[in-house]
Length: 219
Image (cartoon, rainbow, N blue to C red; front, side):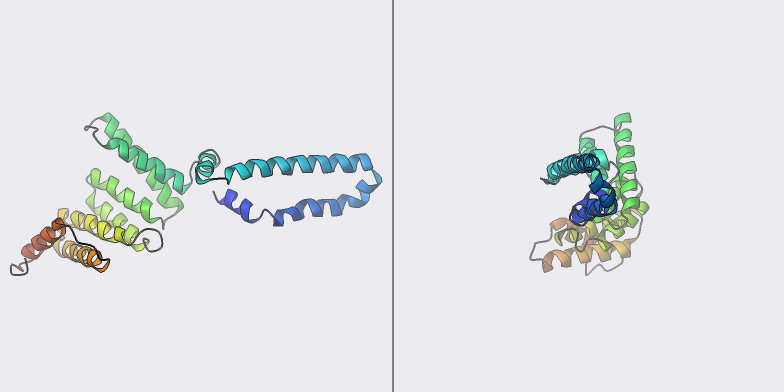
């Protein structure tokens, strides 16, 4: 992905390469017109073909993604989309070998994505959801935390409330009631700050954590 992007940014500066080549070989090629036109023709065809191919790749997001699957199969975006596909196929699949295989595939893809781009919020969020499905709440909390930390500038503000609620659910499973309360409370406040109406479940769970912490009146 970085190669293709840098090619696009460096497209005009890259013209200096054939110019420099001709400047270096000019004195020799001028004396040999046949060699001059041969070299010129090869470079013209090569650069023209390269430009034609890349222009098709840059024509649309779909074309670029198709090319990335071939040129950069390990790119973060490709790994994340493949993981989303694996997770979507999990719906309705009973606990079988197929389910285990899909979870293993999603885990491998998201592990690679977060290693390539540690600050990718969506990759961490999806990884956390996979870990929740595997019953690994403690590890899921760590990835939800990374997803929240890197969310600004990468996702809509409304996503923060959703991530907070999911992390709070994990904290409850781990018996970390105080941490769960803080996340439920933040999720409610974040939703209200954005002009939304928090779901009833958020208030129920915040009340539950109040009760578990001995604050029955607040509950």
